[in-house]
Image (cartoon, rainbow, N blue to C red; front, side, top):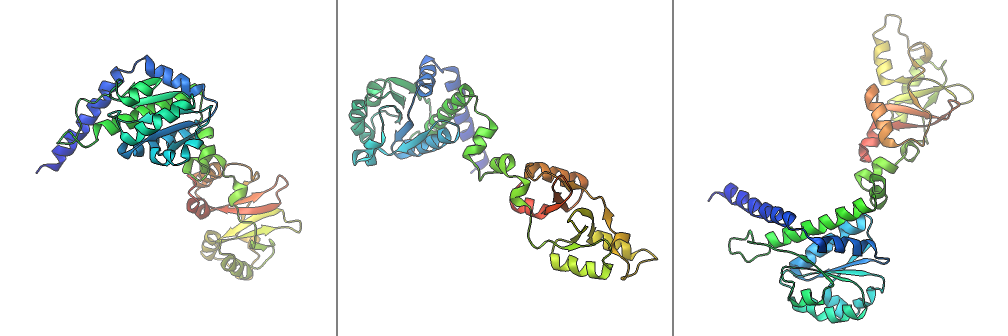
Length: 320
């Protein structure tokens, strides 16, 4: 059996379904977008079975892209959750056939709230179609299922239509990356747009030494500090330089190397620093990578040390 060919046929059938639907988007879709935009409450999505699973994903997409939304299961609605629908809400009900028994049971009650009802179904004359104020047609010539029974092309199309609604709403609201990130503070984009240097820099137990410290003592501080670096400061904690593992290795190659020599003889003076802990951690990572260093010292505008930022910390926290 040629599974590759079967997979290709499945994708081609579903792709053709999407392309056909794209050609047949009509004014009802525009009205649906305008109805949701005018909504002063929440967008409630409901459906049963596979339609319910698609509806739950749609609600999650709406909620994360600027349209307050939640999924309501019809069975739970019949047992008290109808109270979750408010007078300022809009309801999207999904049923490919339009005759889902569980969904049909709540439609009269939904209409009692006098809220706009948008139906997604293949049959505008079905129970769902008749109750709906607007119908977004879900027309499928053929399911990708070889028996033409299991919801495949129809669920793909329903999901894509939900995405199309969400994108239209995003465009209408001028929804930006920063808005998306505010709903996803723990995601990659949220970290990129919100996490600052001050949130990740190490401030405690920093390894300090004076510029006159013998290098043998500085090496011990490097080991104890676990940063691969010792910070050289003056009496006011202003940064003078740093001594890194790399500096020590290079010093060992010098003919005049001595463990009794002051670190200032081998240190990197005037190293790269970040003097604003409010800058984005993602920007700091770019600076560190550009200079091919492992660690950046964070100071205030007067060059006083406030902390250090290690590239390993940025990577571990998912900053990119």
